[in-house]
Image (cartoon, rainbow, N blue to C red):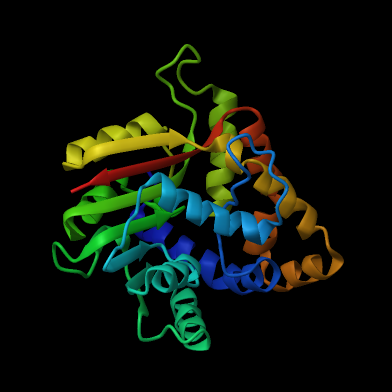
Length: 284
């Protein structure tokens, strides 16, 4: 497995370099969109991203959280959305100093700086006491974690008793079915995705369920939303072909260009049933 310090540095550099472009071109939400269970809803990309947040909240039966932690907050898209929606305190953590600084700026811009705060922190060594939050939210950050079990343990630790953990993450197809273990070709496809998006590895959703159970989570629920989110990548590919976007891409550095060139890897991964989008909830 990749040396953890190396992967942390790669993730930080990747988001330090690419977040400005992502915000400029695609907005503050750095995650998939939701296009209905069948993936057939025709909505604009930004609305689809809001719909993903709302669908996840509805699916997780989120009521009225008093204190929220957004693990892997990016430039604060979800953090600010949740703070405003529930009129409550939300804390976001990211490995990227540039993301954290921009999230703070955005909180000021939308007058949520009294409710939303951001800091640079490692999700595997969270700087919070036990029993600190009643909602721990992780929207597409689990795939970056070099130790998935420790990630879940930390989320469990900082949750208040009765609190809810809500996670959406990139997965690969289950291997406990007739399809069996990943083929050499499938592993090569995943390895190419890992390289450009700075991912140590991803797991199948049943493996995440097993970890959640081992951590002590109860009322564990999971679902596969791959069909609902898969259209997102073709839409992003189309928007990336805009001449102005292409010019900005090249100005952002080679790692950002490489990530853009690799967009079809994700689209193809969904089409072949290899890349999956898993959601999981559990209570402490």
